Length: 253
Image (cartoon, rainbow, N blue to C red; front, side, top):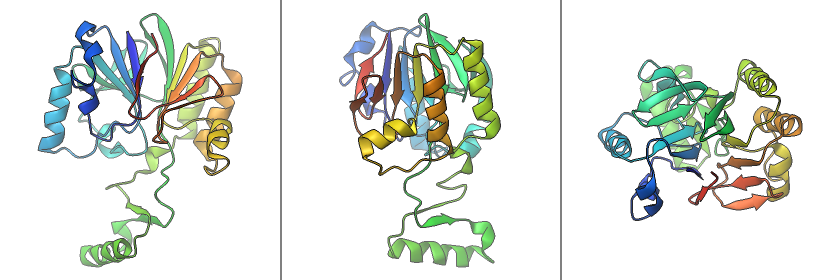
């Protein structure tokens, strides 16, 4: 069995036995996949509690990264990089893994192309970087001012990371892996979606970026059954094959 769901942002209550009773029939050979914004943020007592709680679940939990992950931590030495079902992963717990960008994983006899990342929508007023200030006090004064003015901003290496968007190397690597699989997979898992899809459901509100345009190319070059994504905080089916998920959990295998 494989279930797919949307953004968690560190709130994992949807995986409780009451909310997700289907897990009673699952084993570690069954999977739940989170379409980004899993919620790996700061190493706090609360976060460790929930990750340990997830480690006691009967299923294996997988996630692609979103735009609200701590990429400094994710790509540090804190988490072991290992091979899992055909691709590289970060091992968060014994049964919790981060699916790295551009790999094709084989799960329950099906092929999944995984590619995380997305452009943040809440940075219209900019990114503050403490390294650009003479002192911590001046930096915090500016943070407080921006907050009073209710600006839409984030802080570099605190609440925003440039790695939310992929490198040219990651995108080329993804296309190479798809070609090696004859440009044919059963499912695609991402955080944001192709720009052509975003333009349909948002009527042009979400503007294109390097990743959504890349996904346009992936969609055009790849045979796939369904494309699951999160990011937009809603549950919808678009153009029959594109499945936007938020709190909803649906079975795909």
